[in-house]
Amino acid sequence: MNRISFALLLVAASAAQAQQGVTRLQCDGTYSDYVQNIRDVPTRGVYLEIRKGEVKVYSVPAFGTNEGTIYRTNRETEASVCFILASNDNLYGCVNRFSGEINLMKQSTTDKNKMDSIFLGNCRTAKPLF
Image (cartoon, rainbow, N blue to C red):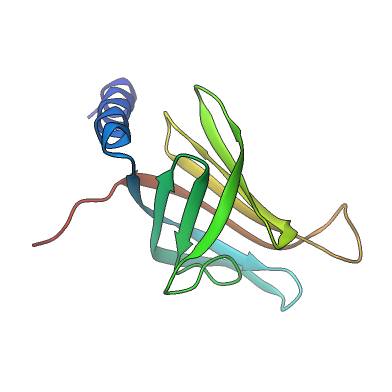
């Protein structure tokens, strides 16, 4: 499937789910923790639920628990949804609506020019297995 077809499929699926009030995404990528000197660990099974005004992140070290961590959206455009943790503005991220690319960042509390942790990945529409 070429990129344009995939992007159109992602947009159509997102539009259909947006009408229902929630978009569910499954993401795979890499996780890095610069404080612990951990680099580019393959990370699978990250799950997001995107609703109007919030994004719930599951199963990413430092960013989401198994029960889900709720972020509030702070910028929504035609191309992306960006969000920030209300209780800690050093945790934030964005999802590209067309490519599915996601980035989650944990900014250092001691040096605002550095990141403590990063998750970079790609998301697709989540579908139940059974």
